[in-house]
Length: 117
Image (cartoon, rainbow, N blue to C red; front, side, top):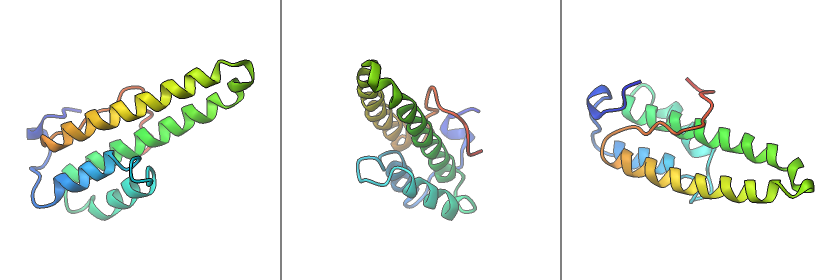
């Protein structure tokens, strides 16, 4: 999928704000709910917002799976550094995606399951 601004619909009005909120939803405490609601509400109105919301939702769900897989590994002390690494990667990648969305693009998160297509 080409993620240049020309391949997506041109963001208009509040599209960039909705895309930014989807990527930064972890910081406001709604990592799954906000991208899901925005995706359902905006998928018919703006391909730009829908693509960003879908990508953010897939990212948050993937990192939840990774964190759940680390919980049993805490007992052998490998899970703690992995959870810290997952947390740091989540913050850094969300900020990078928000910057890309503010430029009118859609960031494809690495190591993300494409559950919602």
